[in-house]
View (spheres, helix red, strand yellow):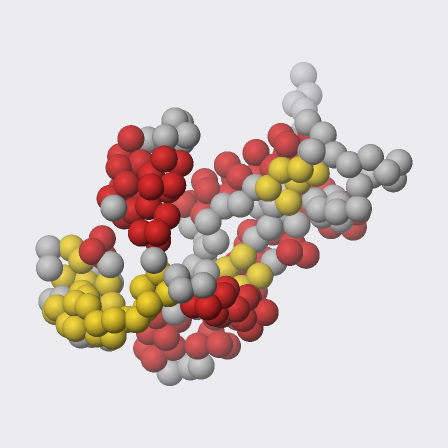
Length: 232
């Protein structure tokens, strides 16, 4: 009795991924189908990863779930927008750059290139033409423009207030980032420090936001309670 040859997953994955890339299979079609008909639209977005340079099983689980949903929507006739981006702007990159003695820009972009290759090996149904990084001017420029719009509308104010200050990382921490009185990343004793800060007046929309939580009937109760506390 001869044994059937084992399925070669690595070879099959590479073959199909090459075919998907050649035909741009996961690109979003904004102009409608060839016959002029528009399909229903679906926007699938997972949380952008921080570009540490290495993916782990948490990344695999997160993006596999989004991938399943994106493929399901595409197979049921939807025009799917499923992009990828990088949460690449802030303290972690600065800390790593200081520790390694390198420029944070080069370190971050090298890590993005490495993780992009790792994620592509998974064969995710992502429209890579929509890729973005939050450290690039074409992204944060839009954030700055939005901030100016909010400021002009009177929804941004500036005043002094006490914050959780990490004296090692030299940054402000949210309450959730203070564990037993210490910074979650550095382990340093957190200080109370008075700083001049910008505030967004979400209180102007508090009632509307709280009412909106009632429609999230499939969200876990603990998550909805956290949202209520943040809004309140």
